[in-house]
Amino acid sequence: MESGRGAPATLLAVLYLVGGGLCYAGAAWPMNPDAPIGLLWVLGTVGVVGGGALALWPHPLRPWVVHSALALVALLVAVLAWRSATPVGVVALGPVITAVALYAAHFLWLPAARAHTAFLVAVTSLGALAAEPTGFLVPWLALVCTVVALTEAQGRLAGQLRAAAGTDPLTGVANRRAWEAEAARHLSRAQRTGEPLCVALLDLDDFKLVNDRDGHGAGDALLRELTTRWRERLRHADLLGRYGGDEFVLCLPATDETGAWELLGRLQDAHPFGWTVGLAVARRGEPLPDVLSRADAHLYARKRSSRRA
Image (cartoon, rainbow, N blue to C red):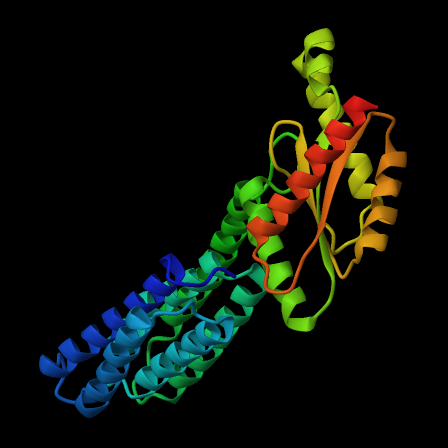
């Protein structure tokens, strides 16, 4: 799930603020004399205060905050459905339900989005069934089917876009941006738990000669073949990324220096084409750019040494 002070947090705040504003409008200008005016004022205040808190909170939002905020919206909409005075008032909650489901589908992983949508549909349907008005069953069922279908479609599309945005199109491994984001999370976890973590930079030897001699198609084929062979020998937790044209980077969680060299040896045996590696073991409190800088310095020291030899 994406979170933080970017679009996910901002749009969640907007959902609360718009919902609160609509509740205030419904309380100030009720469309029916039996409208739950007192409840609308309360829900409007919850929406505005909650949205303001989300908008002004200076730190990245924790995932549990996002999940809790979405669950609270579902419960509030269910209460509003229960207290609606007319069938139109119940069905008119459809845009709010749809907006919440689409938010979950866009910003959460699909299983989590499905769970939120199922909870949303369940509690709001219970609220609607408990309401005094009747005669809205058919449009409500149409609304539920639409929300479920839109969640599935948007969730799958968002997942494909996330995968495409984080994947190198030639080799299928993580691109530089995605690798750095995931490696930073691994590093943060390692520093919390005290586990070792290694970062390795792999630079192909004489790759330019392959392109010059055999053409760029041959070079592309070599990159694909190398990454395929490497991925077959990496562990599930290991993170491989393409860092440049012929430079790759590895994040090896829960791996000390000895274990890292053993794994790199298996990668060397995977394909005859040569490459040089620079390795750095993360130090306590060290940010990822500094770990990469030490791995890069080690890489070029090894390259200079091999040229002298």
